[in-house]
Image (cartoon, rainbow, N blue to C red; front, side):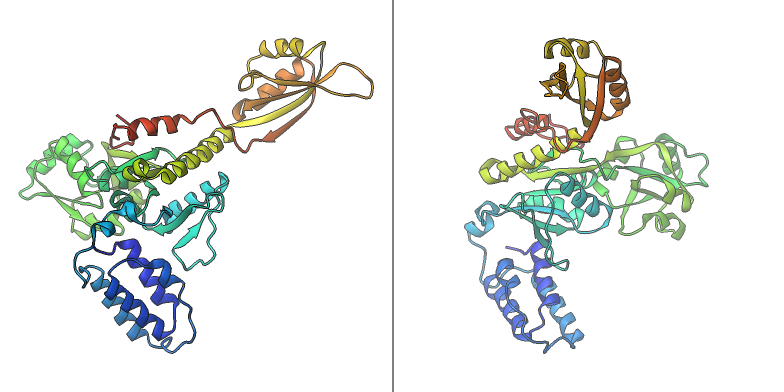
Length: 429
């Protein structure tokens, strides 16, 4: 059994945070003798003194040792079948979130807005919790590693970009898209060429340009699978994919690639580097999604329950953000008579209808309190219509959640879980 990125990160955290040399030695001994990810045991070891705090060379040496060991097989031989099956690990459900960047911040903000605030007691640790979901452990990883972790079963859920899901999900169907649009991380994966290539406007032009070269077209990208498939589909002849990290926009200027295929949001970075996207060069459109390990949902009832709860919170919050609660006082002969006047208007129908109750007034007249939910963009039309039929004292309040009988995405997920699959855009088929 190999230690994955998550397990390696936990071991590195021990060496970064624990200062006692004896504790470091204990951590290394456990890794060598057990060859298994005992994160919880190691994380709880106390630090007592700073004997090795001033030995950065020794610390770097330990890092190198662990990095090398984590790529090797354990010394005690092959793992048992119990260890190899991720479904046989502890019953703690794991959710991975992006560890940093705009997507990481947006994921934490979304969960907090939905009532699923992440509690991270130590900012240096790569683990946290969600008090609303006590059976869930939150981990922090690179977005690309999140897909791999969910695919391999080391984590049960993850928030990452659909572009990375399409690139790294594999062909075994183990990654299931639970929510296909979390409302942030919107961008597109697109081909871009130097501004000086005035005769290359479309992928057909790029194919002609590639055929005219006396060497393969060099395409720098972080998405070799998606990019290669797109180039083949558009008959772009002979090409070499140059896999690279960091800022790809400089690749044509430096000279190690002719064009790039990278994520684009506003396009300003392309323009700043004298590049422009092809008119029909969009490989795919991406956004942040919630994914899950299919086997975990099928075999672990607790994982399926967490999926349902997260979908309930996210969907109810998203629906509520589009609506407002409106209260008003209105004279009338009866609730039925007031409702009839309201149903004649364009925006006063509410979700199923208005809630109308009598008001105990000082003057004893027939006042009623009206409560409806209206779409946020139709608020001023609703207020005008209420006034037109005798409403007054209009009060408007935000709505935290609107729970329906069952979220549409939950039903769609269950259908895919029972036998369907997802296409590259996360849509079940």
